Length: 381
Image 1 (cartoon, rainbow, N blue to C red):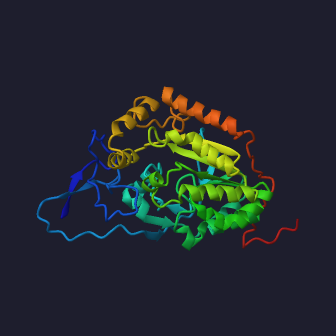
Image 2 (cartoon, rainbow, N blue to C red):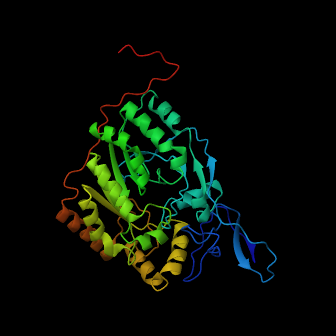
Image 3 (tube, rainbow, N blue to C red):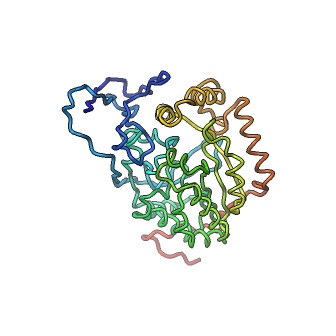
């Protein structure tokens, strides 16, 4: 059976570039990773040793168990994360979970698991962390003197409605705090579980406090299954958008990520289906391959579309200034060059035809009332 070899490398060194057809870390047996997106579990970039599994011919090691989802409590003291990125529309966000069981192979959040000493590969989708005190932490931070309310984004890193939310209910607790304090929130998900909280979302929508975006990467259920194995099917996401829109919740569809020669042919079809469901706004993001995501994606691509690997990466480099990824502000989301320009124009033309983005929802911060701390006396006015 498989043994592992340890290779020393600098703790701060990024993973070396993988030649065509070669990957960092050997693939994990199909039965062990059944229902997962990544094909391997290579060590994170901060680990002093990189372990690579290989068959030494002795068949002396017992068969390894399948990857099972484990959940650890995250004892963070703060829940609102701040950012100063000039190319995104929010300056604060909340992530109720670390890691994501949806297993989307392209997820740009995968490299964050390396900060925990874990692999951005299979560990990212099987070794999860929950923040059960998030509602209480949020209430404390909103009550801080001098807090200025602006829209909080949720779901910009890992999905707040991933499967374990059914058990822990952290997202619902967060929404209860935001509704009670009149604080605006924007949600991004690819899960139909968002409909569980339709009662709260509908009430907040009547006060102009919420908008919800669902990411729809493809209408092909088979492609979705291999690309994002534990996320809701495309039809369920569209149905969730329909029910949200009917309840008066401002909705948006995210065609994200767009992967050249894999799902880029579906841009117009996805927008057509979303508009038919009642969606009024839309956005898109090109595939992003930061750090370990590049090799995980290449490995997945070689397993599922072996005839397209080099063509896909050639187009990616055309859109990223000759590199696999360009993190420059203003370019990382949409790319540059003729191919990126063509995708942008197709998207804009389709949106114009369907009347999408004619009006942008602007949420209100005027209703915010900070929660009263337990130690404080009730205000007189």
